[in-house]
Image (cartoon, rainbow, N blue to C red; front, side):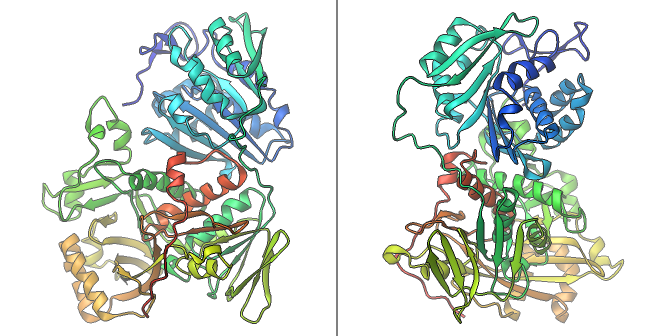
Length: 639
């Protein structure tokens, strides 16, 4: 459950937030606004220090009620010389509720518009990393929920400024000890500025031991002194500590105009790249991303597996993009999704079911379906089912086109790459006739199963092909007649669990339904097959008997239409994302299987973060699990 906060009626505007856990206030007796501005922002030399920089990263050791973040956001937005990209990484072991965060900001009217935006994204804060996106993707807040030392165990970024904040050293000594500061130091470069409100001798000594040179400065009332300093260790840093590369934006070729490729193009363009997207087809989203509508829902497992955790991060990223770029209820809708557990009741992680544990945060994601939700699906009471709060349906092709319309992105169709030629620091993409299609310093292969052949023609050392497998899928869809009984008999939200059904998708001139799909390995054919239509109908009978009965006439009369596409999967069931071995500046972003909507936006941001030495949107071990896998030989694909 969210951290309990008591609001003390002590004469201050709105009351003072107080932590019963630590027996301490969240902010100064005179209010936290001046402390945030004077102690942390100015204490780190901001906004002057970030002027003209392409990106800047602030690390904070205690998010609390988010006041330092809101003040930094306000200063960044008001600064004409602000960096193009601002990362704010904040640690918090005991997150407060979204309502308390907003209540805290109401004391400061100028911060309320920012706090209201923050509140809308403060949900589902289970242990781990959570990437929140603001200002069109140029302000990125990474909330790390858990013990500070554990969250910073494997840093992948360098902080430019450090806010050391938290309850007093007497009340919460763990956040101020030498082990925490060692973890912070691993995220610093020489010259990283640090600031805090406490001047306790134990804090100064621990910081000095970890390589920080600090000094007292006049404080903000009621504090007499504050502390400022820099990371300037007297020793040489270990050679094993390699600073993350911060690649300068240049030109990029992305091959593939589906979800994966379009997402990568948009993420890189936001960072200043000039991106050319090449596709062999004549229109964007002509492959597996051309499905009329797809269902978006997280994966759930009793042990909260790696796939489950990554799926939540991916869905958060996708919903942010859909909300920013698409028309709600036309191109997408966050309706929630019911998962009918057809084979057996699906177990939620035990920690999610403890009332005083993670139950509240977990219920922002997934909870048992209610009797009313089951009734809306014409399923009997007691049917094993889950309700995915953060779910819905999306038209993939609409999102692809929105990403390709990003400033800095150009798309070229009927442009099949047949050869790669290396010219100095750039890759040249040639067609079958040897004509240049594009030339760029970076290449990203995002062409689904076709990424395998594209990597092979680049002359991959050792001849090991990417471990990518073609997966043929055929879905069924049809239109509801205006005011037709079948449309009224269906739920207002998608259902999955044995195939899926998106029952009410606006598709001119009315509403449509989409169900399926088949799953056939090592088949690259997109020819429609009648037997697959019947296969989809059979699955629908099991998933939603009432819906199947309502649509039976369309299937039996041949009115149901088909759509087929080829997806791409890996042996791990996780995407393949990373630099190709032995190939300078050539990356792959593929292998998302039937979860392209879940993973495309997340993988694009992860790729961009690795290129630019930014904080990752997920924990390091999760990111490493997506590194490209290689096969011993290529399986034959069936037509």
